[in-house]
Length: 180
Image 1 (cartoon, rainbow, N blue to C red):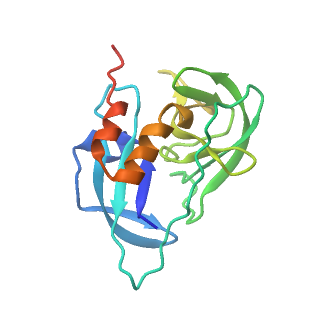
Image 2 (cartoon, rainbow, N blue to C red):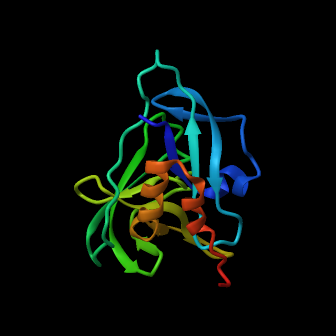
């Protein structure tokens, strides 16, 4: 009901784009602005957007439940995102497993095409486990069935504090340089 969207910071050029954004939700475009975005080269690749909708509109989004714990190796998960290749108005959902856990990230075997960045990785109960950052690639190849996701449990507390207070300072906990 708040019109907040959690996505990847590279989708808003790491905060260089602040306004004049359009976000498609349920086949309708909404104006949006960047509330917060981590800079390039930071551990968390996250951005929070706020969409504008009138009281005449019904809330276009879907409430999410943030998972409080890390995934379990071998756990079945689902990647949900909009692939650039599909050309569909509906999200692409693929199934895989958690194949590796790191302090701030989860690697899954869900098939993820280009364009799915910012999409969700959810468990069987629909709880948000991670946010799709990218698939794995080398100079020669792309591996769409191996992908890296920011783990929700590693940023959940600061996001919940922000949602409760609307104080952007809570999101600055995400502003960690990879070199730190």
